[in-house]
Image 1: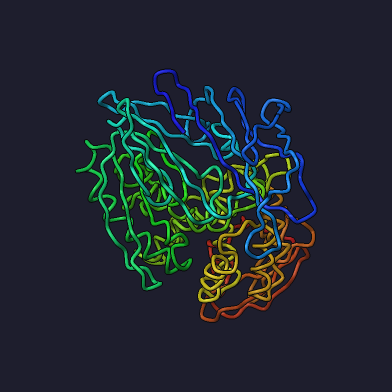
Image 2: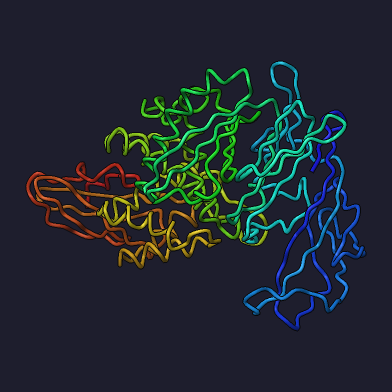
Length: 509
């Protein structure tokens, strides 16, 4: 791949390997490449083949039959590849990473600075691929970039080689060997400098940490990255299990936009400051002593990159769990009180405009509440389970049992239900598939407490805990229930970590 900073164009090629069962002999393949990018030519088994455009963003390749296909070692599948040459002016990002595309920027010294951010928009905005979140290159990818030799080119995985060419150009080759989602494959091109460190992983291995920043930011970046990266890894390996891409290493790369979870090459643009652009998103004070982008985007290495949803309708699994990783980071380093306060703080940002699970099959990622509501719901779920050791085991189990897999929200839900033995499905349906937040109505007199749920699905039942001199575990439903309450226990002792609204019923009850 070779970008041209002056003309804002890209040209390159992509070799895609694919497998199929003997006897299938596929004759056509759909490839995605978004306008105004163009496919120039396609080669299959070393022969040029025909192709045609379908609509704005799809192309149909004609794979001619040939008996020279190579059988892979297991003998169960056949493997082939297509070589696609492409070029054009990619869509330019308007407000990366939210309104994404290719980024042709300059650093403060006026030098070219290029990258891309294309989550949701799709990797086919700049190169031809099978552009669907369920279709990851399961053997990784090799990324080659041709750039002016005054610049440095960085990508996912590990650097394989730098080759000098004529015309003052260099070819950088990087390789990632783990499965990787297409939108996570990314080039960073600029006047970068690098330093490295090692982290002792819970696996017993040393994880290579590699940091890339613009040359004039080295002094500011060094203490920030050296402080929060090891703190992040300590917390997340405790809660989620080993860093899931140890073979490819861990990188932070300065970017001209705020940040992105590019696998093994996290995009960082938070200005080397604590908080989110210097702010505490929770408004509680607990979000101001750590770098939001280092913590949040790195959390995606477990939830989004290790565990990836097949459809972006289920992206709450990416964003909800990763937003909750901030809560767990605070708990690990500052204690449970701070974690509870932070989570309740970000809950105030929830809009409840629509469900956080979108419609399947139509590129609909659901409400932006997947961040804050997702985190608030997971804290509620943790309170419901009422066993932190089990809860932590589930988080680690998800990352182990679905290691490097694409899944659905239903897989995550079933995993919680199976591991806890609790009837949690109505809870998932309520908080993920509706935008109604349950109301806990109550009436208390003497040692009697009446409770019911409203503004919710009729079948919802919710286990809750009431703390006091004695702890009582009860299950509330949409029907009025009366409970005998021990001395000193009242509605006020129901934890605010549960995500519902409390409302006193009329005195006539």
